[in-house]
Image 1 (cartoon, rainbow, N blue to C red):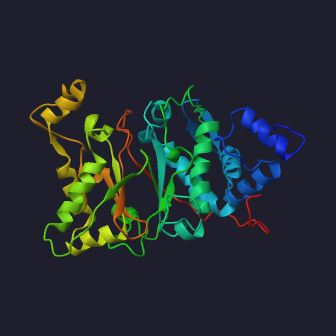
Image 2 (cartoon, rainbow, N blue to C red):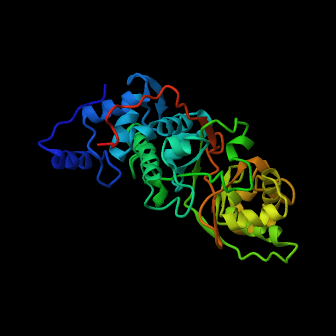
Image 3 (cartoon, rainbow, N blue to C red):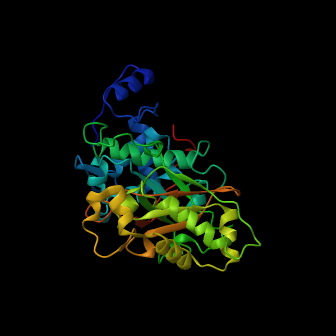
Length: 358
């Protein structure tokens, strides 16, 4: 069972949580037993069910403890399937969570949601400002995962979380793919899932890097120029992708940029292939910028990504000049791979009379 704390009132309880380092620095919803119980009930699972062990503190990630974090984050019962799936994803060995939580790099888990859960567990925003404020489900779901990592995983800044600076995505980092308007198939479908599945894909990522490109429909090289600019953003010589290599990355196309690639009749696989090829660099470039990391390179050229599929490509956001790319950490035993997890919704229960997280 989760440890119970006591306080005179909710204002005092908030100060207790802050004083014990149990918040992310922002105010939280007080996780009273009643509130937590209602979120556990919504999952249709036993509160003591163990989802896994969360490093670096090796805390037991039970359904109840995840519900505590979700309550504190402000989650509604409808958000719980995506929260649980996100926790299950980062607990997979290939995510390298313990190492990721302890690195000096700024990496944070980015949650990408596909399938019907975008609506049934939200709505989870995929349009204008999807990674910014004003979207309750995005904010609460991403924040719930962070509070799990803080309070179950024990990642305390400067103690076990050694990120030198971090980035704002360490508060919350969640969006959905705009499947309905994208010229590409849903990302989870190209990852091997059924189109009707709900899936979260979680990857440890840097903060979004803006990439500006003004297209020219009369230019036969329009699509390739866009891809070249995106490749520079995702693996420039200041990123771990270009120096450590072998990790993953995320490219979020805005609708205008997605249409440029659609006019060139490029599939997701072809986009990934071209980005992968554009991030093959001469070894002398690595020698110049990071000589100590160049000794392992054999030959005159090296590649930033092992295979094209390591670059996740999706469409989201409003239409215009700017797309976003997220380089990654590229370390850990599995090179901080992305992990996809099916969102299970069938066992979840509606809680009568409960329409808010408080």
